[in-house]
Structure formats: structure tokens, C-alpha cells
Length: 340
Image (cartoon, rainbow, N blue to C red; front, side, top):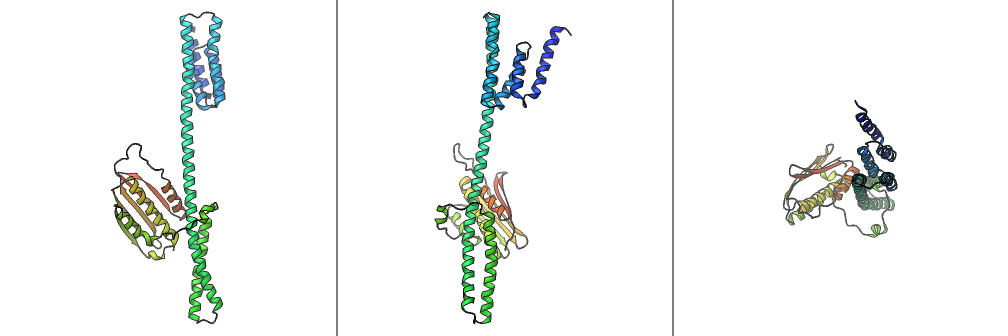
């Protein structure tokens, strides 16, 4: 092989070897390759190194690396002392290569930063949704716990001020006290499990209505049917009256959110609600609706934070919730333990 062919080949191999370190030391590799460009044909490798600097390094490093890559161009023209067409064409081409590599790298970095910000915002919104759901659950439990304690206080007071009551009444009151105390301890344990931060003054001052449970499910279905929804319900529960209030409220909230989503995103489509369960077997709840026509461009699609909150609530109840669309249907599936 002649020397005229071996030198360019060695230059290409050397520049390619230097690119191996472009991710760990992007600025250093770029400066070295820029220097080699003044003596050897290493322009493609230098362009790749500049792209890496612009896409991965901070603004200050990108600026001085770009300036260092542009500096040899006027220096070469000055040293040669000629400004004829070939030299000017080479100078313009070199400038375009530098600016193009840096510009494309900056564009890629901008896309990466936008994607990172969008992911961080999504995580923040999800965390806020979970936080709001935890506060709502804690407020619901507060109402139930207050009811338990007031009941316990009434019966304990009756035992104190009427010690000579018939033995049957004393036994009945003592049983109510024992049951209420046990349920109050369970409710308190659940409150401490979900309450991570204190409620705001507005939240504590606001009067909350009684929280719905499975007993209100038929009323919820009737409301949605009255609004024009086609809802089919299949409930097969054994000893449903023994289900604890927290799990009962969780089932109600899941059905409520699923019907709301179906009404918003698939209006006029049929919805099927299936709920089965028994002591020792757990609860299985599935809400399925057919997907309607795609939303018009620009129509709000929702952030899905309601389902995120329900997944958090279901997890706190010891269960698991999954949701998604497949084969023209959207389904919400929840599996919960049977807590009596």
C-alpha cells in the first residue's frame, strides 16, 4: 500500500478509536479531533464528537468547544494569506459542519430535557394524586372512628351509672363495648397507615358528608342509568354485610370512578359491572366498557389521576388494581382481600 493511501486510512482509524471515549470525555475528545483536522482527514469523527458535546455537556462547555472548533478556520485562511474560491469554499464548509453538528446536538439535548421534565411532572402529579387520596381516605376513616368511639362511650357510661342492671343487659352492653373497641383500634391502625401529612385548616374545618359503602351501590347505578348510561350489574356476594367499611368504601369508589370515566370517554357505550366474593376467598371487581369513537382532535383526554388514586387506595386496602384498553374494550380489575 502506498504512503498516500496509508496516511488517510490511519487517520480515519485513529479518529474512530478516539470516538470510543466520546461519552466519558466528550470535550477532550472533541478538542483532540479538532486539532487532528488541521493535519489529517478526521472531519466526520470531529463532527460526531461535537454533536456529543452539544447533546450531553452543559452550555458553557458547548460554547467554548464550539469556539475552539471554529478558531482554526480563520487561522488557516490567515496563514495561507489567500482568499481564493477553493479556500473560501473549504472555510464555509467547515463552518457549516461545525454549526450543523452543534445545532443538531442542542436539538437532541432539548428533546431529552423536555422528556425528562415531562416525566418529572407526571411523577409529581401522580404523587399529588396519591397524597390527596390518602387524605381523603383518612378523613373517611376519621368519621367512622368517631362513630365507633362515641358508641363505645355511650355503652361504657351506661355500665358505669347503672351497675345494678340485669345481667343480660350488662352482658349485651359489655359485648358492644368490646366489639366497638376492637373495631376502633382497627380503624385507628388504618388511619395511621395512610395518614402521612396533617390535613390543612380548610380540610379540617369542612364538614364531610357520610361516606358511601356497598349499601349505596344500587343508588349509584340508578343515578348513572338515570343519566342515560347502559349499565349491567352482576353482584354475587356471600355475607356482604360482614365486609368492613374500608373495603366496602373502596369497592364503591372504584365503581364510581370507572363509571365516571366511561361516561366521559365512551358516552353511550355499554358498561358491565361484575362483583363477586365471599369470606376467605376475597373480592373480585371488574368494570368493562366498550370503547367509543376516538375523541376529536384537541378534546381533553384527562390525566388518569383518578385511576392512580384508586390504585393507591386499593393498595392500602391490601389489594391490587389494574386497568387498560385492549381489543376495543377498557377494563378496570380490582382484587381485594375480604376484611370483616
